[in-house]
Each structure stands twice: as structure tokens, then as C-alpha cells.
Image (cartoon, rainbow, N blue to C red; front, side, top):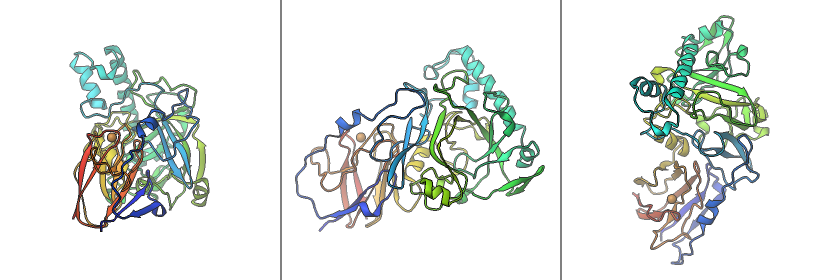
Length: 414
Ligand SMILES: [Cu+2]
């Protein structure tokens, strides 16, 4: 007898929600997910949240406009990014939006590619602003320099981002010559994230060696509208909600918790217990600018995460896949570009599907012509959602997506 164990777990694995079924009867009534897809809500202005929260965690940092996560028993918003309406996002490999790429496009003197949605003058202005940010960042070679200039180390090292080092004198206005924070990072391998990296003692940094500047963070006063700061439309500013600032939270409950030391998934109680401060809404628009040529990221100068900052990923797609499925013991099965890829696992091993696409999918047993949703069915998976499944007998198992029936794959269990 074949048994399949599955857990509905959008971004969180809840052991209690797993169910085990014996071979399902051949009855297939497909749920109508396409109707549900239509109404993932949107707010009426740039910085507000929709009135209705989704039922499950959804959205991936840096890749979707709203990110919702599970905090305890609740689904809460943790981030809004970008202006309402169409945004210029540069996360496809074919699009060139890193600092060095933008510079090269401008200096080549030809047409500005359509996807940048700006004219030549605007691009020139942007490249100029970014050069000023680069100079502002590279005035610090080491954390000693930052300490000597009165900056304050204000976060642990986040994966693909680094530590935030705040310039208290920068205020909350936009000035490319004086970003509110400088990002430093060091090769961390599997030791990322790092909590106690050290502190400033007068003009000196006391702590781990080897940190180098990788970028800047801008932190502007929170206004109704998306800031119009850098020239052009590439700057997708974000606002953090329900965030735990500082402290150490041990039991953050999302799949990416190893990568998120300032655990955004902590409940207010967990946050306070870990010595942090729970902030319902951060009072600023924030954005990263990766302007250090050595760490020039394919995902664009204003990307949330930089695949060239440790732990390294080869592309924004791979980065999103890693950040979606996490890196624990589950077999990672990211869904990318409407494809399940090749999924191979052992008997009883947990396979974690994670939707790294910008559109919802399902992971459903069977195929379009022989659907078996009673056996297992993830339900709607928005961007960033995950679904765990395991099989207790070797064999080939068909899966498909109810929304996109041409998305089919065979899971091989050894
Ligand atoms: Cu699909």
C-alpha cells in the first residue's frame, strides 16, 4: 500500500497539520483556485496594506509587493515594497540594472533599453547619483573607519545583505552623498547569520576581522507616497511592518529563519523575550543600494538581497529559490518559471516545494487528465509559499499545477 504524507505549510512547517492518507479513490473534483487567484487584494495607496490578510503566508522579500508571514497563530504583514501599480523590477537575467550595467549602458551612448523606462538624461542623472553613493560608501574601508566617523553598528549580519551600520548624523532626508546606513559584510559560509560581530569602542572596532563595505541603505521619512528620490523608476522603496528590532529570537518560525536573525517572524512576546523591540510599523521608507563594484549584483542596484554578498548565489533566480525553500534538511524543490524541475528524493524524505514565481501555483497529485487532489494538494501557493510532502514507498509520482495544467512533473522516490 502506498502512503503519502503531506503538510500544508505556506512558509512554515507545522507538524500537526500533516495528514497521512492511504491510496486515494479515483475521484477528482478539482478545487476552483482560479477564482481565488483573482482577488489577492491590493491597498488603495502606496504605503497602506490591503484590508484583508491572506489565509496563509505569502510573498517573498524583494520580489513581491506585500509580504505576509506567520507570527504565532496569526498571518501578519511584514513588508510593503514599491509603488502601487506597475513597477520597474529588474530581476530577470536578461535585464541589466546593476550599478556597473547602468553605467555601461549610459557610457555606450546608444538607446536606453525599454525595460528601464527612462530617457537618457534620467539615466545619466541616476548614474551620477549612484557614483556619489559609491564614494560615500567607499570612504569607509573597514569597520574601524566607520567607528572613527561615529557610525553605529545596528544589526547582525543578514544573509545576502550584511550588517547595517548607521550614520546618526545623516537625518531622514535623501542625500546620495550621505546614506543613512552603510552595509558591511564578510565571507560567512555556513556561519551566516552572525549575531555578536562586535562593537565600536571609541575610534576602534572591537570584534571580528574582515568586514568590507558592500552597499548603502537609505532610510527616508515615511510619507503617504512612494518616495521620488533617485532619478527614474527603479527605486522600489519598502516599509517594514511587525518587525522585531534587535535582540536574539531563538524560535522564529519561518523556513528562512536561519537567514533572518532579526527574526521578522517573531511574535511580540517572542521578540521581547529575546531582548528585542517589537515595531508594528517602521517609520521610514527604506532601500538598499549596492554600489560597490566588487559586489555588483545581477539583481539590480536597488535589489533587497545581493547574490554576490555571502552566502553566494549564482543568480537572482537561484537566490529567490534558496530564500523561498530555506536550507534545512528538506529536499529543495523550487518552482521557477512555471516549472517543477527534476525532483528526486528518498523514501520518507521531506520534499519542500517553494513557489519562486511571481504568480500562484499549486502542487497537486496526478496530472491534468488524471488529477488526484484527494491524495495531496497544496492549495494556492502565492510567491514565497511552500508545501511539504513525503512518500513512504519508492516509485514515480506525478504532480501538476491546477492553475497551469501544462505544468507537470514526475517525482522520483528512491
Ligand atoms: Cu501553476
